[in-house]
Length: 410
Image 1 (cartoon, rainbow, N blue to C red):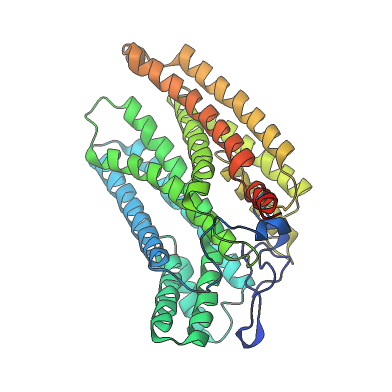
Image 2 (image 1 turned 45 degrees about the vertical axis):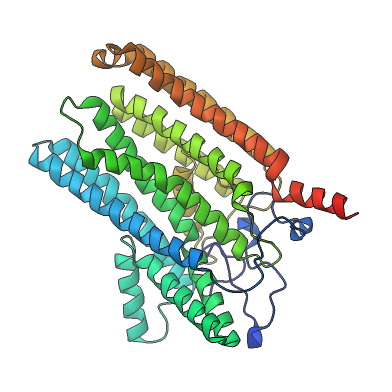
């Protein structure tokens, strides 16, 4: 199992002898969410009970849905590549395949490193072979398989009244969820988001009729973003024993914030893809490298405790996620980081929309209402997301809520 200082497993499950009670966070300090590690967060009277060390049927259902969303997304992208090839659109086919398999290889390498840090390749040829197959095919859906099996066993033990076995499989479930929580973010914003930018640009460029596969592919992205963020935040809080589960009402502004910002960024990048495809790739890579380098210098997340180069490459990979959203990797105040990040994104968004207004293809300008709506939505979604962020931090953040509860109790 990874050391406490390692970021390889985003959430590190504490070793507890004889299945004792959990009394500290198993989340490394560098990955506790935002400024959410204050002890007052332990007072969470309005949240659902989360100390029962059990798995609900809703949790099992969420894992099944994650598997289905992943499988459907991969199959749809493969179907799109085949359709483009049959339509003699070799460029569209090549870009679709590249946007599918290149990020998939990156996430698989990150997951392999996590498995190595957790010593999952140890224990003989049989276990090493199973882990290797899990890594190779994990980009489809097997990454969620162990989590599903453990959660079902935990539920079965609960129904049988076997408390020790229930606690054992609960910890294994949370550990597996911890191992894949960050990978889900990489899947969403390094693979799914670029794929949808490509498909949106193709939709706006092509003169043929829009196919059902294209509509389903883009629609699935709109579902996968909030679902990924919801699963990620649920995992992070589940692995911190001193924190209760937030109600869905309290999580709504948080999800709306990241969803609207990422959707706005997707639209803005799509606009420039239509007019300057090579330059937008250069700009995105530059954005990722600069922010990844700053993350490496300022925050120093420890992805590997042995090889420093791995830490740097991990930060660069994280920089590609920062093209769409910012996820803090260190437990400290994030006000100025968010302010700087969203200032940069605001300038980039206005630049993208401005370029689109002046250089958009003529066939898009013919429909004034559609053209104006696209430009407006790209800006409106961004500032709706910023407003949701302000609402979340002033009204619904766990520390704010804990402070209100303390005042009420006093």
